[in-house]
Length: 238
Ligand SMILES: Nc1ncnc2c1ncn2[C@@H]1O[C@H](COP(=O)(O)OP(=O)(O)OP(=O)(O)O)[C@@H](O)[C@H]1O
Image (cartoon, rainbow, N blue to C red):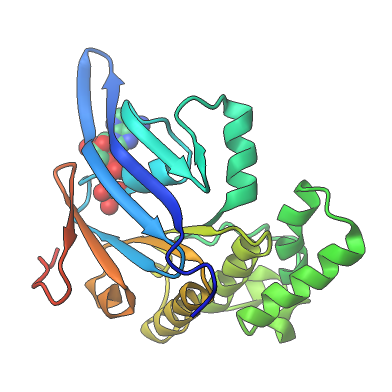
């Protein structure tokens, strides 16, 4: 077990989100409490429009809560300005998306180098760290490939390497397997599981109930209400 296992990496305390569009207010998420610790993979499931992405966006410091607090990597983000929030995201959070979001004209290695270049890491050190990240997702042999020369599963593993190269304690994944064939789903989820075992905290939003066996904990969101499922509970299949 990694030394940091059990450390609280992200916490949502009574956080809610209300979106105002014209005269109407939409409560995307009712007040929610959630603690995410190092060493665990949390799955966030629920039907379309239920509030999953809103919860992930709060954890990701992409939006501010309407009420309550969000604490990431020891920092209460509620009162940070946009720039401080962006710095926190770059330092503490790795994002993985459904559509990989790789930069197409760049090689796998160049994509993984990008966050380090943004952080101003010296070139030699950056190359070593990118090589290590590619090794962690077993993609060293494809470092010179362009995204279009790789399968969806391979591209997602490069995206995971890019997310973890800055060594963030928190990784947030939005439908990371939605564009993948079943075999690649398995490979990608194994990679994410392994990262949890190495001490990262991961939250994964999905519609896909087949991912449940890879999770340590499952939170189900319905109509903006998040509820933690007890292990072995019979989950609604949406
Ligand atoms: N920027 C916004 N402005 C107004 N309403 C929003 C905004 N973002 C989300 N919503 C609304 O909040 C509710 C929850 O949305 P959210 O994206 O969190 O759902 P979701 O569970 O992630 O859905 P999906 O699985 O389809 O991505 C929805 O009713 C949505 O229309």
